Length: 302
Image 1 (cartoon, rainbow, N blue to C red):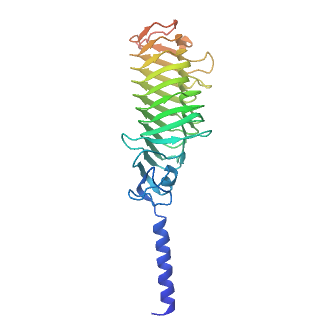
Image 2: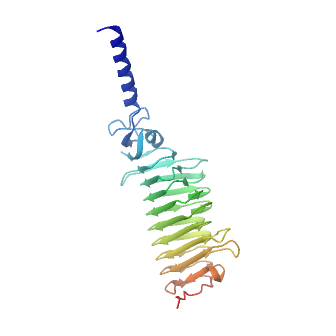
Image 3: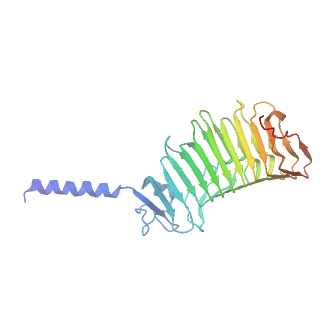
């Protein structure tokens, strides 16, 4: 074999080796005992979510093998991050956001079984800045100074939040707005407690709250607050108790709120909003508020 052939074969081996080293897997793993220098396989897991995301293909999944603190991270592609059923996959941050989703216009992102701890100085638990869809399932978000879940889009995008607890938040538990298009947000089987505002439907958002608890919000449990009067919040089969106002919209720059089959009790004001923006479907349990306010009953079209 001549020297030319030896050199060519050596180069092929080097190129193939380099390609394999940088190949992305459809499923990767993290562990409290992992190392980001590993290939993120089940037997050789990574240490942080950030390290594993780099080695995960678009549309893939990162799973936690065991409890651990896996660090803050940013998502720029379609992916699922799963902390593992029955485990505690923690994102502990200080003076920064926990998770930022800045994905492409057709990308869907899933965050599941995660615990985000801001320790009082973390800014936002989860920020959704771009992407087609974000699902937040079975997560705990606690101790952030700004918002627990901050949906701040510049184009249409939807969010689904289920079986999630947001607690001890400086400003808004769950807030949604977009500067263009529509931002539908579905909140179900979740709890938002000890915030300034529990859930806020802001500009161009459509928010539903179903079978959920929003309690102990100093200002308002659910607020529709839109500079362009284009925000809708619909609440059903939920509890709004121990808040400043159960539901609220300002007299200018508002939106619309409807409440049905829900408990509205022990608030300073039950319905704190202009009459034109309020609908009570007449099947709510409204009791023991300092003031009930005014909520006109629904009148079906003739």
